[in-house]
Image (cartoon, protein in one colour):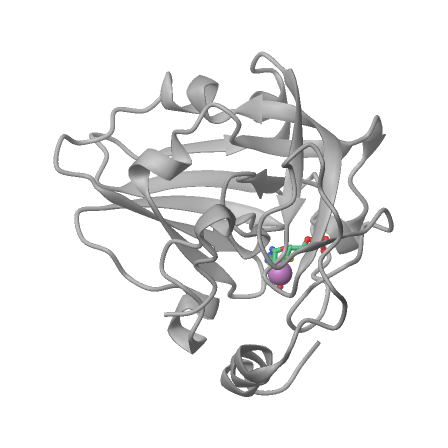
Length: 209
Ligand SMILES: Nc1nc2c(c(=O)[nH]1)N[C@H]1C(S)=C(S)[C@@H](COP(=O)(O)O)O[C@H]1N2
Ligand SMILES: [Mo]
């Protein structure tokens, strides 16, 4: 998926849903979404090659001290499995994904976030960024995932490590994550700058700014 991201957002803004949203007796599909079981790949630009040897997670910005983990040290932290749903703003939803990795609550045990931090920018390889309110990052379902449904994440899906933020549209779930930047003020990320919503709650259909 290439080209000008603004054109893409404009097309999506004008598009009718390609299908009538699926029936949803359990109330798990947000408005305007339909179900998929195919786990589509959605990437702007190329899939970067990120090896575990050179993988790092750096935490900087509004924190008392910068922290950087390499692959082994990060994966030595306690591991969790979290099953959650995944909603892309292009209207597909995929239910019951089991992600394995390191929860955000574990990560924040090792950093001291300054009291005036309110937002976060997630930085990924390939210059992708996305912004979140701090409270949304700290949600109990958020994790850094290295596996999906029992298998290591493939490169297309963000391997070796991606962020997963199930309660917001999936563009917030940055693949090939490399840094978290804590911020006192909000700053739009890649898709937010191109016209996607600043927050992106699928239950409120916060698709566009
Ligand atoms: N680094 C990076 N992360 C990204 C993207 C991207 O292009 N680059 N696309 C986002 C979008 S729009 C979606 S829907 C999900 C898709 O994840 P998937 O390709 O594993 O299904 O990843 C998100 N994370
Ligand atoms: Mo998406």
